[in-house]
Image (cartoon, rainbow, N blue to C red; front, side, top):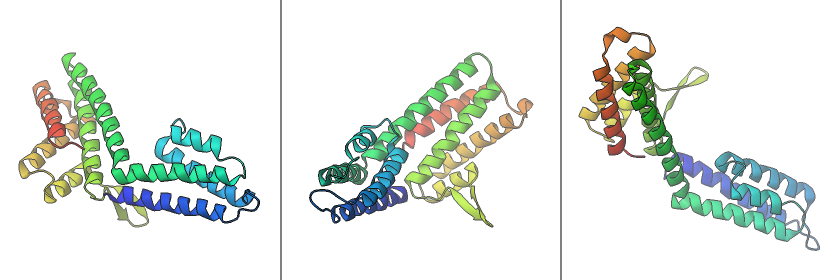
Length: 219
């Protein structure tokens, strides 16, 4: 279980306990309004951040947990418990991986269209961006930090640094690492206007290589 999921589980456990605290204020089947208000606001914020406001969990919580009857608070706790179960089973990670895969697929299709029409430079930048984000997601999946402390600031690590750390952890081999380094270099040349330093054939090879890399190193 990755660190992000562990932190989410801690948060949902805290909210469930907050809901139980609301229930401990019950008097004649009603709970304390101010305690309930804090529980409701914190829970809606958490659910919105995790799933968005259009998700059933958010809608059901917002509709059902809005008055002081203790049964309403129990419904809220049940919804949070269902979210906890999803996190523990890894379902949320699976859904995010599918969404990420779809987004990557769309960008790669656009890159292929750019190549087909002769626009090698934007194609190289787009393919490189997909690769960099995939490296970032691989690091998160394998509990590799994607940021570093620089004085008082937290800065993102460079893509090549992520590449090195993934290979060091044996997420993929040295040959893959060298290929990624070359693709990132080509992307940087395109992004910085060094258009004469590569030809369209190299970008086409980059496209095929990155596509294979994504398939071999799935999230």
